[in-house]
Image (cartoon, rainbow, N blue to C red; front, side, top):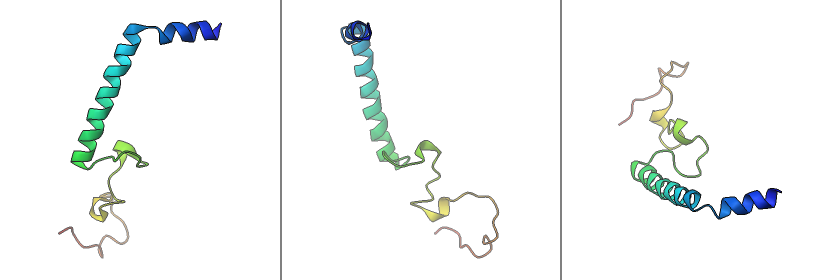
Length: 74
């Protein structure tokens, strides 16, 4: 039963075209992320990352107890 449904999905030419288009868009987006140095592939936080792991000055702008001692970015 499931095998028959999977075979029909694998044979669906329209689905294969859509998957190819999606894979191309993924490649282009990954190139964009690398070029912009944002949300690197394999990084944990994805697009929600503020980049604080790479750039300390990118930490949240919320006031903290040590904000008076932190120096501004160069």
